[in-house]
Image 1 (tube, rainbow, N blue to C red):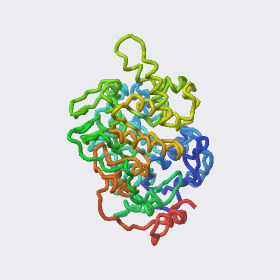
Image 2: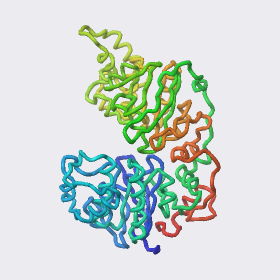
Image 3: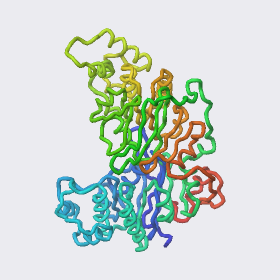
Image 4: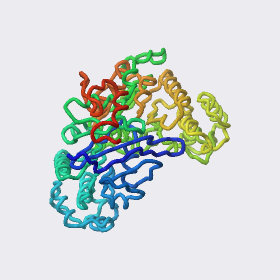
Length: 524
């Protein structure tokens, strides 16, 4: 491979108000290279890809294609510059047939047909409507559409995540040939086995910054995990357990039991128990099936297989109200999903009381008001009860979401990243509340995208990878390095000691981060 980059992005930054999604990201990709882009949840991978492909504008930074500065402010501009993405979700318009979708993007039909056959789908009818085509095939069609226009740089975001083994193998063969042809591929994947077999180098992002460039050699996985975690891998230790967080004894009968649960191709054969008085954490990288797990337990989607038991009795949920009646309540990370924003705090918290009415009749207003006031005081919601929820801070909005189910005395909370986008002080209050909920004999299933939260809240940790439970840790063993390795599908075991390209002798993430800019092919 030549040392002159095909794509060279430096100092890329993106802010959303006061929130910095990217601070100082750099990515240098050589001709003929398959280059992995890696990072933990929230590291900035998706934001960088969207900037490179013109989906969103950057606030700062420079992008060079074959040494020429390019101003990429739209997907069309990215396409003209030779950058083309294939995202996780299919991009074909569902109500149009395949041929019409090709015409919308000026994709040549015959090269598209040739790539579709090459990718393992020999009998496609391009007159078929997109919505009638299986998801796995749609993803392959997206890739074929991109390949048909011969982009200089192809950006693949979790390309094999929803594919059966035969199609995934075809895709990986084609990706490798793209590198052999002198073009380049940026490859985002949570599967180390794919990265090891396919990629030449990897750029690692952490907290919106590029922290290292590594050569893909045997054993490099541990070094990548170190870069993802940074100084936390040195400082991580098991926090002292408070009295409220003592290990929960195994119950005679679990509150919630999940057996061999499946949801389409996303969730495969997931089993675990949740006890009364327990906070069980769920850790997974993006798109590993955690969304489908919580949606199935909350009654938003129907499982395609397996069973759910509540208090030892089989439970089938056709609607979220069925789950709520069984005592399972969903607390989403996006507060807008759960709240009536133009209604008052009191009305939002009181919703379960109204929903519980089975017959016409007066509402016990005094009892309702007492429970609402108690919940507001308990969660220290910083507002008067008559204030509109939309006027509250994000942290207080999330408190209202949780207060609703606390006031309703719900037995099991399904909390999906509930502290996302919340200030540190409010996070601490929510941690304390969830421990109090467990202390009163209730149970909590707690998914978090921030690994450090696990030891603050949980008793056990369930790790999901590729739609399956790959490990269950007692919290005493669930330090961040162990969780990160499990989340990438790596077994518990010995660590490797592989150097960073920037400095083959570096022994810490800090030195790797500071020296990455001097590595061959890295951004100056």
